[in-house]
Length: 432
Image (cartoon, rainbow, N blue to C red; front, side, top):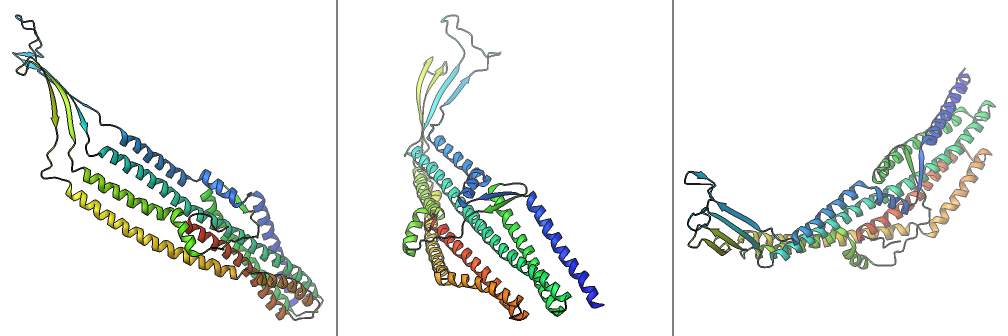
């Protein structure tokens, strides 16, 4: 009676496996696969990312402010005339004796002239502010590109992990079919058959978890690339990771000071604060307003032409508070720069040391070990089928072999991510 129940149960499980694989196949068929290299991915990222586009607009806006700072202030036109006199509105009649107009009107044109080089100093501030916008864009680009490359190579390694699990599942499914025939013939115990079946189900669950993780990273990558719909990005990079680490952390730090956008941003902020202090000091000097004026019939001369000059007297307000504030802002920013420099050096040293440690795990001796291990798995599978080893010994070796293959893939990912971390902190692809 027990054996009669076993066959339907096993058949149901196998049918469920086939149905699951069919559904996955149909889903993959409907999905538009985009095979992209890392260079193609980055190009698409640069061309389509909306965050970068918005940052570009910000740069253009700040560059327009440079042109605005170069403009002179507009002249000011003032006029005054009588609107009511001798019981009449807008009395602009003529004197009967002289023939001259009897109404009064006044016209004045004034021009503001900024002193102490304020206009040039405002241009310098606007220019530095535009430079800050460019560096902010570069820093955003650096962070997004780092995330992009992390997602790309993580998906690449996840697909390798999935392939390992799928290959293992194929081998075990074949073994499961053969063992079912042996079970029917009474050559093996049912517990051995169920033990293999449990491993198959466990692998199927692992594949499902892998698909979920891949889907999460796919969503992140497609968001960066602004790809909509049900597309699947398939990385096409090879396993050959060439790393040139023939340098020192000090050399990397010197390169980073010239290329790390965040560090350069903090340095430029210091320049901006220094220029602001110079500008605030120039505001102590009053601006000059000069103009010419014409007054008709309201002065000692009927036709009065005069010159007007005005400027505020810097007696009480000499911009003392803003000058002190600008001075403290410089000291604050200089402290931030020192902190950024220390952080940059530590980040580079830590990332470089991790890269060296990872390189030690990817030597030729380890690669040869994994090659031998793959060959041994084939021999162990054959030995079990020929009943030269027991089920427990085979399953123990199978688990160890699967873990070893996954560990090898993880080491490749660790090496790639360690390289990306160094390049991220340096600000350029110095490690190839």
